[in-house]
Every structure is written in structure tokens, then in C-alpha cells.
Image (cartoon, rainbow, N blue to C red; front, top):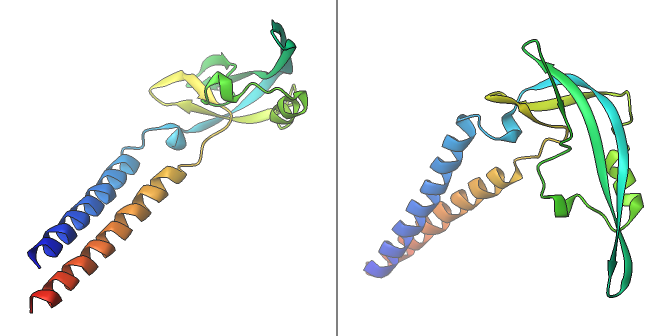
Length: 159
């Protein structure tokens, strides 16, 4: 069954490509997950409420707004970035959820600020977990194992 050997080889190569891609990506030390941190201070933390009229009536949305200061290499910076999610993901219909988002960052609190080493003006307070890397690595390993199994099956059927 040459087809099975060919199919298994393709699966193994795809798995190997995913593994190499993730290893290279992790080693580059790029991305928010690898940004260094400094101590900063929360200057203000509040929930901004926007009311707008819709055909269904008045609709209110609540957005957590945090202003913090930090210093990198002697240069002072300020930012409002809690995370790098799109604004639609950080605006809530329920004010309780918006308040919960700012609760860990009260005004005056010392916070860990993660900043972009190539552009220290870019910063965030919430550092994402690189779980996607682990999923892609797992996918690569599984693809290689399945590919090896298909190759073995093809060899056994040929003999």
C-alpha cells in the first residue's frame, strides 16, 4: 500500500513542520508572552459608561479604564492598556464585569507592567498565556505519531 506510506509520510512531515515552527517562534523571544516587566503604579482606575440610544431603547456599555505609570531605562511612560484584546472584548454590558476587570488594579497600587523591549511605550498589565504554542506542539507530536502508525500499516499491508 504505497498510498498509506505516502499519506503517513505527509502527516509526519506536517507534524515536524509544526514542531519546528513553534520551537523557532518560542526561541525568538518575540510576543507579549516574552516581554520583560518593571514595577509601575496605577494612577487611576475607573469604569467608563457609555449610553446610546438603539431601536430597543437606551443601551449602556461599560469599559474598564486604567492609567498607569512605569519607567524603562530611566524614561518615564504612561499607558492605558490593560491587555491587547480588541476593544469589543473589553467592553461589558454588565457593570459588575467591568468593575471586576479593574478590581486587581486599584488607584495607587504597585503593579507589574509588561513592556515591549523594542518599543517601551507599548505595555500591558495582563500578560497572555501562550497556550496556543502548546496546542500546536501537541498537534505536531500527534500528527507525527499518527503518520508513523500509517506508515507501519502501509508496510505491513505490502508484505
